[in-house]
Image 1 (cartoon, rainbow, N blue to C red):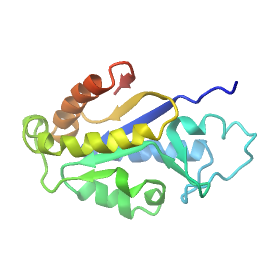
Image 2: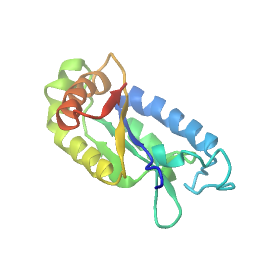
Image 3: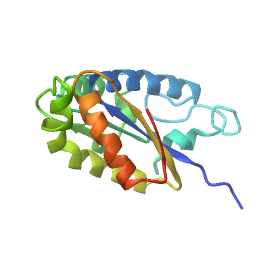
Length: 171
């Protein structure tokens, strides 16, 4: 019986999380030989191909897309990712969740602006997890200070633990 691949969904929260997350995906794409167009550029028997389905989902057109949700309460950082020639074409448009005003501090990210956007973020996460054959867990990339990454990231950790109590969760 073939081994089911364990899938990890990456969640990038706020300015810091999205900036670090972008560098993470650039590195992972390079390591797995995934081009800017999302196509695998190599031999499928090579070590670069092994494990690609842990972090990527393969579409019908042979394109690999990250199992990743990107969110921020203000559009600046997400807009820069969407316009980046290096990485913009690998993300699914439905996996971006963007607000219109910055959180600025932990309380706004946790209680007010972040709280209002949490259902939309959880819906995006739920849709991505449903596409995984075997969900192992989540990787959250966020800051510990500031607004969206720290405040909304803290709230998200609580929600993920409630909804996915038996899945790995690391930040």
